[in-house]
Image (cartoon, rainbow, N blue to C red):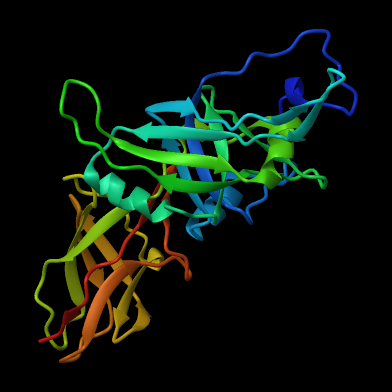
Length: 297
């Protein structure tokens, strides 16, 4: 269930008296497919995980630095001294992430994207989004642009930059229909983004073999990934078609998959596949990846 903080409710008439809550520092951003809607009455982590499994939510990406790059509203000053507001302006940010080139490679996939909306995550784990007429909550529709990757040439500096422009259609929500919410069973500041993993086939693929050993590591770091031992969340792809992995054993990132017997000249690969979805959910961690295709001897 989602709880909307009362200090963010608003009516058509401005009520500016009384006490108002201060906002926390923004520490992260959630990228969500524009189709994602949260119903406050029925929201659970299971529903959230379902969106992530379908690759509709990337997760909370921690922001290392950010600056506003707003386009101010446009006005016309009349001869009688009055002003007319012609445009509402546009909310924009330049966000910086002090991470390596592998992170940049992934971030670049967002360049010029109009697929996503954004939620901003506060330090206390609450989130700001827009409330629709039906009471559901979604992110602010945005357009994304990557900046030029910088490397560290002094004690400080470097990193990747993402420009976020709210869509014109999102501005009325940002200005007048934004809500801050929190969940009973999710701390959104702890919602890790989906991790890309490398899956490397270790054992030789030979005809009649019913087991294959692979190593699973973080794609962007030299560290193994453990705990992905639910067989239903893995598949073997043989000549383009998916087949089940029937059992999984793991030790220190080395996995042994049990599967149907291989046949000479088969093209084989292994991938995370959760009932057709590409993301493996492990508590608040999320993983996606597939191996390269190899031929059976």
